[in-house]
Image (cartoon, rainbow, N blue to C red; front, side, top):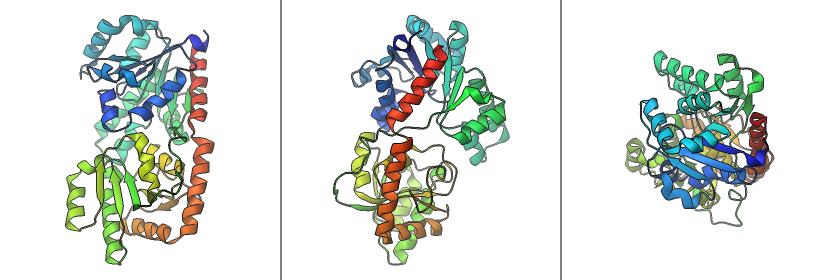
Length: 375
């Protein structure tokens, strides 16, 4: 069939809804790709798991929302879906997952209706669980789910060549069945702004769990203050909910500003008001926030770990450091002290994003996959 007549149904990550995206500030960003797809295909459906997600319909243009409730017993979730949306599901030409968790639902429906399935994931849960040193049973369960998701797919989509190699080697999936489609950046939104006032030395955006390594970032700020370097830092996102982070900021009088979640398309204002961006994680998948900061032309510091070192070339389009607090502190000090380095890295970071991760480039890759599964 022709691509312009195609209907695609995206199955959200298990238990995730449009409300979830809205609360963390990512609604506009996550929807943008599918708005663009609708210029080339007939229909896009979102199967979400937040109950009454139709309240967001007016923000989705022609995307149809098919909300239901998530149940730990997947057969009940399927039953509810078929009861409410049997015709929409049956008439869809392609099923697609948003992540691995919850992929059992479209796999079951693929088999029932004989539809092509695109298994897409932004990160591989088993890799993150191994980094967190979870027990063997938990990791094995995640690997089993990943194996099912990719082996039942007509095409699998991952965000990096590293993940493609892992999937093909670990699960014996044919290389030709796996595509690399990175996360995209709306480069017309995330861009350098003309002469913004610099209110902050450092900006961090994200969660506050162990992966993000914020305790060492706080120790780094403390270390610099003890050396007589006063650093102003703004922290945006769910990191605000971490009581340990709040405690150390208050105890050590670090003066960090915790803002909580901010709508994604408002982030460029904060990024452009900052002298540098930092992502001090212990590991990453393909971090969108790093790409967005680079797109704004910020000099970016990232730890020399998987998912970050893939996109940062040290002292060229960014600065790589260790995960310990002294390495983080020295990196902040080095970048803040060298305005020429800031300018060079920021310019190269922006150009790197335009070459590799602009929405139009990623949209082209998505359309190629859709055309392939349709044929």
